[in-house]
Length: 289
Image (cartoon, rainbow, N blue to C red; front, top):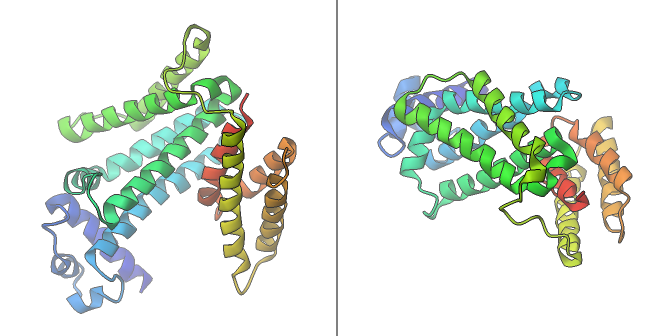
């Protein structure tokens, strides 16, 4: 059953890339896999549900694979960022026709489940970029985080357009290195620059709102883990760490060393990385310089 599910997704990607989403029918997909149309509904409620799963799979592959390969480069932050960008480019090139069809057939201003998921994924992807830049450059980048993130995303997007529209034959590895080198030059000369985008607010109200948002995210995750009927020893320890985090965030002045240690401990868990990315980024911004 799992293999058939995967076969249907792979066939759909291929057909969507060849003919577009609207021109590809469920019958086209099932015919490609040699199964009946009725069998399709054992796996997906609709074609839209399949597209939503494909979208989520694409971005999960980027996040998971990039984080996994970069894990060994903990003590080489710039190489870690290069690896993350390289994998993002490799996956984008692999799915380039799929992404092109998405851009043309599901504009961001439209209503519906697919544009809404695209918008949500875009924000998660942006937070992932913010966190990657903070990891690579540390406190040197905090004043310019918004600008650096926008520039990095703009460069990646523009080169992807050159690949998709003009068929440019570019090496993801060389391009990833070039993007990071450009960012490094900017950060190295930061004293000569003023940030264009507003610096993240340090007002008391904003700080309290950020802490409340982080606590809400952690509360939700902790509840999900607690609701599991069977828990491993590792999951029980994760719940304890989450509860300590939540308690500490409720304090007026949370201890940074404790939050740092607990977040890093939890972030090493493969099953928690994606869920904690938003919280980790928010925490780095809350701490400021």
